[in-house]
Image (cartoon, rainbow, N blue to C red; front, side):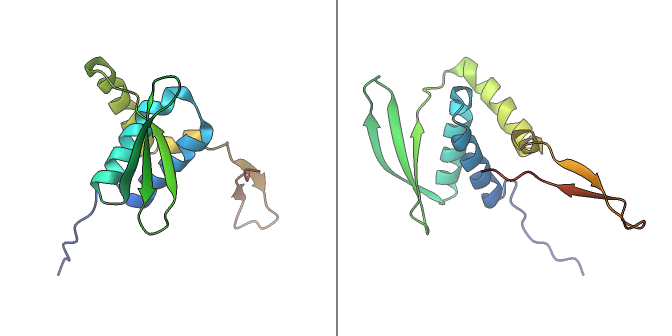
Length: 127
């Protein structure tokens, strides 16, 4: 008998990990993607919007709190226009369909001494 379990189209841990990775990079081109990920996490009840402030440059900064851990995420509102949405959608699809590996440093492949296991993948750790 097949068990019909409902599979989420976007795993919560994947979206959160991707959000943390993009925020750590600090690339201004990722602001739209970061904002959309934060809104997705809010809609899935993982984040709560705590405050909205305006910085000296006039940008709105939304402060999200992660439920459970209490981690705070300051997210700059990119004020997306209709023509920007297609670009952000494409970027989101690329990252969520496995393009997140492009954000990680490349893995080294080294040869082992055991003949039945010829290769092993080592990932570089971030400092």
